[in-house]
Image 1: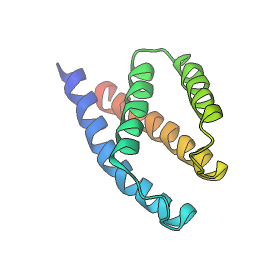
Image 2 (image 1 turned 90 degrees about the vertical axis):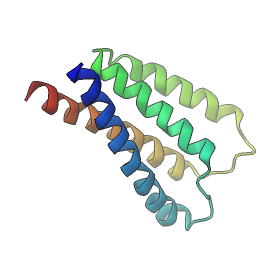
Image 3 (image 1 turned 180 degrees about the vertical axis):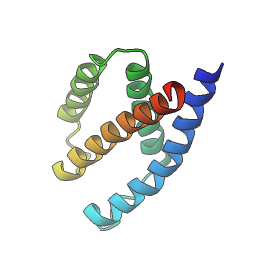
Image 4 (image 1 turned 120 degrees about the vertical axis):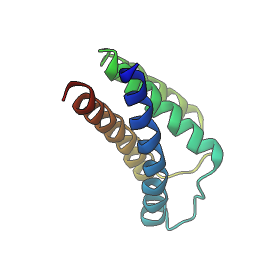
Length: 111
């Protein structure tokens, strides 16, 4: 039960902080033009949940699946005119956050 509780605490606190981080990121890279929608917040939450769960369960290969899905969705979506820098940095931030969640989780669970 301690594992599940630790997982949820790290995830929830991390996601709350990530919302603030991504708002700052939007202001810096996009000059606040791309208002962060609830839809993009939920997608980001699901992405980081998937990556965090993959790491906790010893499945780092899931990062390959994540990359393929991200590329596939980006190729078809021409009307979504976000810059490549915004897309790249946003995805890298999600990966860094997910790995950070995992490292914090490991510190809590394994001391």
